Image 1 (cartoon, rainbow, N blue to C red):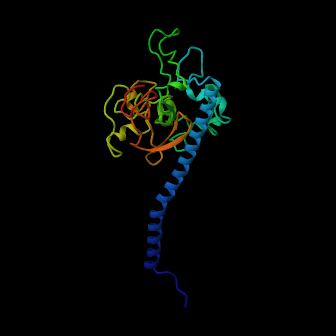
Image 2 (image 1 turned 90 degrees about the vertical axis):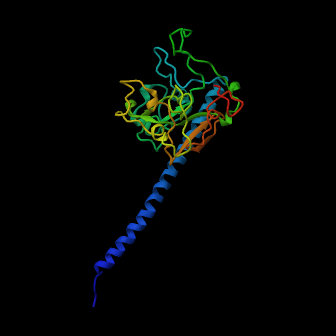
Image 3 (image 1 turned 45 degrees about the vertical axis):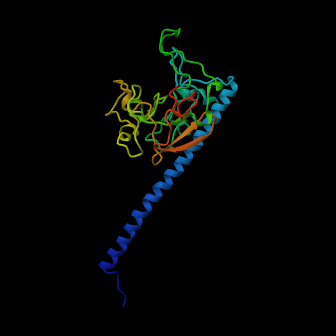
Length: 269
């Protein structure tokens, strides 16, 4: 005589499936994020190669994260290396289209939205904010060459960055002067360890409800910070062109950001 499953047997099977799902789903999520991190590392390697090609063509002279020259549309770093990248955005904002972003390597696949979400080290070719600029403050910059870098293999150039809804989820072109500091430009402490509550304010994407930079300017609310979006890891490009992922808290400040330091504790540009 045939009989079906009893209620107890069905409940046991359902419980077993639920337990297996609870175990496997996080594993699947981790594997997917690891694949995205691998893609992000590949993006950074290509950006590093494009940057090295740019430097080769311009006598080893660097470019700033951004510079606002009246009448120019391509003052941001990502446009400088566009001619050396075959896919994605071109050399002006007009080319920053949805179709171009679909193949763009300057966008991390783990980002909250498909928009530019890498930033550049602002210590390289910093802007000049005084009247010595012929076209006004912020329209010229210090010209740096390869020769000024004291430890290029350990100096960050680009990295995963916080995205800001007020800029259609794009990131700032540049990082803070010393990223992961409590206040972006005014100082403050750095997180003491990976679980420091300060990370809750620094390592997050910024919705318009928290800060809309188009209406008010307060860079301490998310501007220019590193985003450790790969399971508390972020990917960086270094000044010698290589790329590497760092766990949150492992970046050495000021060493990994300074371009002229000779010691890890030297607070120089």
